[in-house]
Length: 311
Image (cartoon, rainbow, N blue to C red):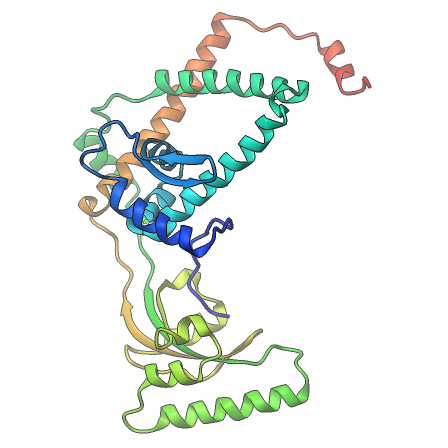
């Protein structure tokens, strides 16, 4: 079924009343002006609780896209809190059963501690200066990579979907064909309302609830069978039924954005972040290489070859 790629969600769920509480608490109190210490309790379940500071710390560990989603979408932020609460409950049960005293767990914790110390120290010594990149360096990087910055043509699409999976029995296929013919006839009428027809007839409930709207899709993310037809359609045009594995898709081109290269000002923040990340990686590699050079490593290759063979 043709749909925009959904944002990945946490799968942990809590009862509806708690979900509502979380949504309200998180959205109204996370950035409260009077919460200077971050000690405000955002949510509780049983004896477990989550403070504003803990949520901020967890969000900072997410990738940039997930952070942006959490900032603009209260529901996504609420799901992060649910995941933290679930982890607290599991942790409490494990500690109550003294699982932390298990020798294997103790050894794993020590490895994690050592890795965390080494990694955070390496990050600190590899961090580029705050002045990097300069305006001149940003401009040079933009000019050198302008060809790769091209944003492909984008289509704002809506659809009426008629379910008819390949391999369906003859009876189901016949029913789908009757429905498809009825949809085509309705769309062919003068002044036909595509959104109303999609809402009433489409077998895709997600897009049907929005009048068939699929939103903006980059040309490169659209199936070849559909992309080949879109090239000949202008804004406002409706396609012939397109057969995919799940059924028939009748598409409307709501709008089109031609390919373009964004200006430096449009991508300044993203480009700066990318350059800083690349410089940090390079600094890290150079730092480790210098340490290894100053502290030559000797390895008993013969003994090493037998390590994995020992019981």
